[in-house]
Image (cartoon, rainbow, N blue to C red):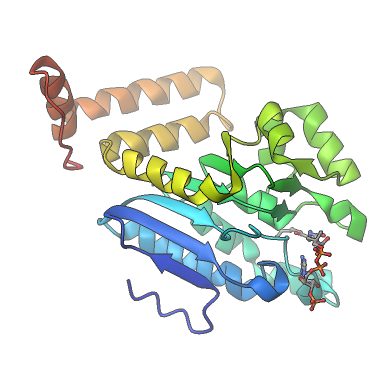
Length: 262
Ligand code: HXC
């Protein structure tokens, strides 16, 4: 894929059919998310959203660190107006609005914006040595990319408040227990497990997967009746897909389905 990224902080591996592996590569700064990393993430996720050859995405920081947060050095002298004019919400939105399943494979620190980045994924696979946290309070800040909202919704008030207010570091096993992580693996298995899961998702009917993602994420925003209505409409919509015919026919004919995304 020609990502035309300039100063390249991301590696995009498209060698597995229908799967994209996106790796943040800024090891000198613990993968801290400076503006350029976030711009590149937005660009890559936008391109992958439109790429019909990709059905599932794995996002990782590699085997050592996921991301140690926003780049504190880049924020050190910034004032409110400058921060506002950076419009970083546009970068985050590009990831949040990706219609395809996104799996975060987390090793090492996922702190501040790094934890928030992981929470942009649909599924989080963490190595045993992974550490999650929202330590912004310790530098006089607060979460700024979903930590007060996505974390709250993922783990509930009392776990979220503990993390946000104290900045405590939460190891992978504990993160799993509170619902911040989908699955814990040995550290060396994190990325392979995520890739295997992505390959299996990539074989699922893509329209159905995308409808699931869109409707399920809506449950965080809409009243129950509106969400149930939306779910019913999307469910009904799937009845005009070829993939639904293929899925049910394959079941009846006792064979494996092959989905076309139609
Ligand atoms: C810039 C960072 C960084 C960060 C680490 N580095 N985290 N640079 N921004 N967030 C750099 C260090 O300055 C250092 O560079 C190198 O990476 C290695 O880090 P060390 O601190 O020497 O490593 P270690 O002692 O192992 O400690 C690891 C750590 C610690 C626990 C992750 O670095 C740390 O506490 N980092 C800050 C974590 C944090 O506060 N994150 C939240 C940021 S605010 P040099 O050049 O000295 O070798 C945020 C707001 C989100 O995320 C808002 C929306 C985006």
